[in-house]
Length: 382
Ligand code: NHW
Ligand code: EN5
Image (cartoon, rainbow, N blue to C red; front, side, top):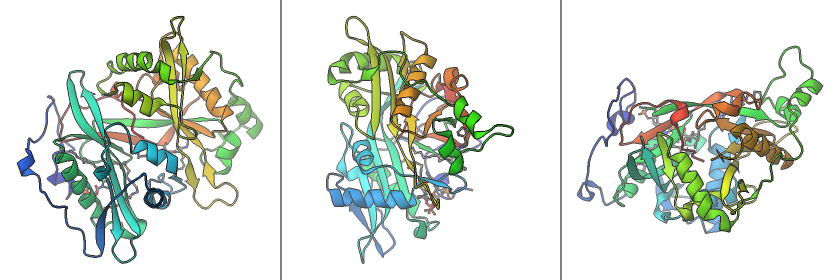
C-alpha cells in the first residue's frame, strides 16, 4: 500500500526483474516548468550552503529531525562542515539544495538534496544520475504527504538538467530495493557504548573483560599517512579498478577523488600506503558522523566513524582495516561502523564487528535491474 510510490517509475515490491533498463523515457518537453505547489502556509527556498545562516538552518533542521534508530535513542548529527562538503562535489548545482520554509516566520521545516554522480550498473551501464540525500520533514509536520512533494520537486529540477535516474538509500523498505544491506559495528569505547545503551554487556562477561576484548593496537602495523594531492592520479586508478568489480558502483574522476577523499578535519579521514614509485597501493577512508544521544543525563554525543571506500592490494584487507580501527581509536571515536557490502565480510568477524539492529536498503529511481546481494554493492552514500 504505497499511494505515492505506486505512481513513480520504480519496480513493484513483488516484481522479479531480469533485464536492465530505464522504466520510463521522457524528454524535456514533458517536464513541468513551474515548481510543484505546496500547502499555502509554506514556500520553496533554494539554499545557498555558502551562506552560513542558510547552512545553519539546514543543520538545525537535520540535528533536530533527521534519522533516528528504531528505539529513538540516537539521532544522526551531521556537522555543519560535513553538510557543506557533502552538498558541493564537482558539478553540484545550487538549485538542487531545496528547503521548505513557513511563509510567516521563514522557519525551515523541510529539506531534500541531489548531487551529481556517475554510477555503473552491472559493469556495462554507465549512467549519469543524482544521489538523493538528507530528505527531512520537521517532526511536527509528519504524515501530511509533504515528503512526496519534496521528492517530486527534486525530480523535476533534476529532469530539467536532462537527468532521469537517481540512487538513494534508506533504513525502510520501499518499492523496490536493489539490495538489502546490514550495518555492522566495531566497539572502540565499550564502556561508553554500554552506558548510553548502544550496546549491551553479553551475559557472563564483566566490563573489564569487555574492554579487554575490544582493545586495538595503539600504533598502526603499516606506515599509513594521510592522502595528499600528489597521490590523486594513482589513487584514482586504484579506486577505479577496484570499483569495477562491483555491480552497483560509482566512477570517480580525479577531481571527484580529491573532493571525496581529501582529509578534512572531523569530516573525512583517508590514509594510504605507496610503493617505491610513490603510487598508492592501499587506501582506507571513513567519514565522521556523530549521533546525538536522546535524553541521556551524562553523554550528549556518540562519535561514530563510518567506513567509506577501502582498497588493499599490498596487504590483506583485514590488516588495512585493523589499521583504520587504530586510527579511529586514536582520534577518540566511540564506534566504527560499516555495511556488509564490498568484501567487508572478509574482515567483519575477525575484527570483532557485530551486526546492528538497522538495515540499509539501496534504491534506483527509474531504472530496473536484477536484485543484488549486498556483497555486489560498491557504492557508499553519506
Ligand atoms: S533516507 C532518510 C530519510 N529521512 C528520514 O528518515 C528523516 C526522518 N524522517 C522524516 O523526515 C536518506 C520523514 O519521516 C520523511 C517522510 C521526510 C522521511 N524515502 O510526507 P509523508 C534519503 O534522504 C514515503 C522515500 O506523509 P513523512 C533518501 C512513504 O513511503 N520515500 O511522510 C531519500 C510514503 O509514500 P507511500 C519515503 O513521514 C530518497 C510517503 O513518503 C521515505 O511526514 C527519496 C509519506 O509521506 C524515504 N526515506 O515524511 C526518494 N520515507 O507511497 C528519491 C517515507 O508509501 C527518489 N517515504 O504512501 C529519486 C528522486 C530524484 C529522481 C531524479 C530522476
Ligand atoms: C542515508 N544515506 O538504525 C542513510 N542504526 O545498526 C539513512 N544500531 O546504530 C538511513 N536501537 O545495533 C540510515 N547496536 C538507516 C540507519 C538508521 C540508524 C540505525 C543502527 C544500525 C544502529 C545500534 C544501536 C541500537 C540502539 C537501539 C546497534 C548494537 C550493536 C552492538 C555495537 C557494539 C558491539 C556489540 C554490538
